[in-house]
Length: 192
Image (cartoon, rainbow, N blue to C red; front, side, top):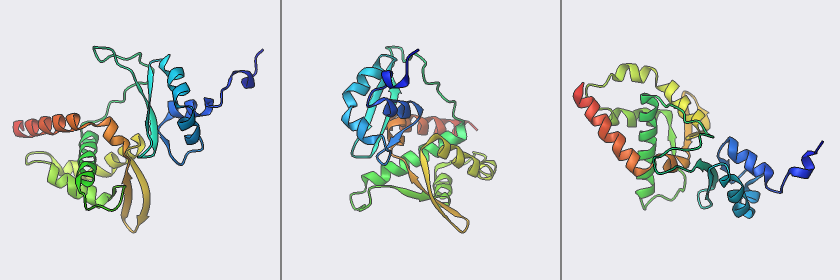
């Protein structure tokens, strides 16, 4: 019988954490990811994964390699995200893009309250969309985005929650995806 000690590497814990979720700069395995980046990449590439390290933005994650048809080995199951949650993600991604494009910003992180999210969604949704139902369920959609890791709750004050938009949203929702979704939403609203 073999023991755990015989089979682990100095970066084993980092790989396990990366397989579970995004790893932040504040994590106890961050230094291992930076130090053993090549070894980790070599190891996980054997199962069809790629290590993405964003040092300046303070996070790392793994994504699946895709073949020429966009297929993967299927190690990580893709979550089906509902239409409404997608709208929240697109609005947050656009908000982060606007924040990053503003050279007068002194802060490096984009913070937003649930009220501001709701206000931005009002501007985003066109005429004809069932806004009343959407607003009624909006807190549920925001919680869903938090669970997906795109928003981090920073604090609560009275009836308002403050969030930080996680920069991984830029990796998962590219500008092309953002533009494509906005076009599809506009077409959908015009057809209603």
